[in-house]
Image (cartoon, rainbow, N blue to C red; front, side, top):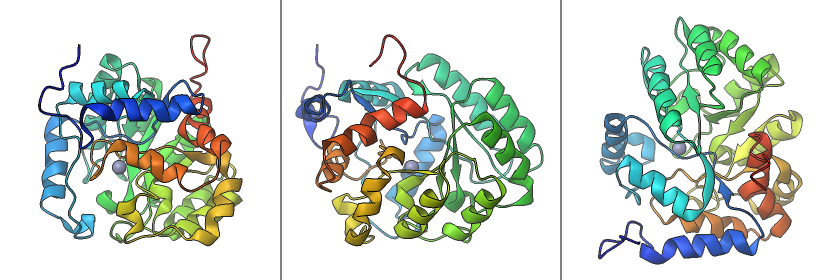
Length: 310
Ligand SMILES: [Zn+2]
């Protein structure tokens, strides 16, 4: 049944799925919930890949070989093979006039990909409140905002009503707002703190643990009960090499165990998927913490614990 042939799909080849399945079954989990995976229209994704290949300034000049450069259906199949029960389609505009089009694509993608949490995005532009409302009405369950690539201020007046819609609807927003791998004009905890002061109930999920401003974003999570963080690329050898997580903040990470969510950045990662899991395990915060982070927190947030599930 397996068609890996001589061309293993990941850096770990045909044994990688077993390794990953062993990881979550050892923990007694029914699988993984990954809140940070990228699916987007094929030509947009190709552009993103070209960008990583060309070592654009936003990669921080790092070599960034994409580990899972596959067709869309194959990428979804790989996640299922890993036992990822629910994932997202993190898509984001880099200019005005693009978000509504991405959202239309995402409706269709969610329809043909039932294990993908229907994802939508936004940009500070006229009409944003309307298309965010439409995406919510169409069933969007999570939003993605990319402050670095979009080069906008998340506290921009134009976004204010849209954040209000999302806060009222309780829909989580995964937001890349930290200054890694390279800072942007509006990255860092300041602009986001202004958004939260305005919308304290907004369910922000700070991508990449806010790297490299880990502690400042932990401050925000400690202050606002609906702020969460995703683990995307954090704690891996790759990120620790140039943006290490401060060891002194580990107790805070442990204490926030119910608000840390597994994210991977699949497929755009320069190492095997399993490495993210081992990077979490080696933090030494224990199995209960790992269970919450790798599955239970996401399952709870997105209401995945229906009768047929765990
Ligand atoms: Zn990402």
